Length: 55
Image (cartoon, rainbow, N blue to C red):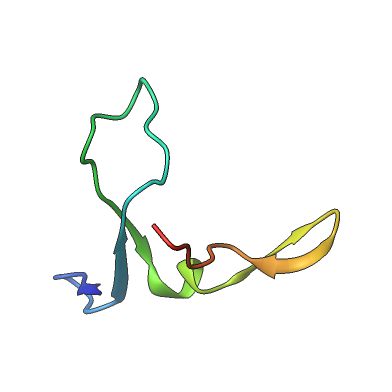
């Protein structure tokens, strides 16, 4: 977890499971915690945007 310096909004620091040609190895991503922990609608219904993996 991290905080946005201007607003103190909680952020989640995460890394992609798979490397892609347009992202350098070791790149970290930062997403608002509310979005990261939120749900999205899919053809299978509502699911968590991100799920914990064993990696």
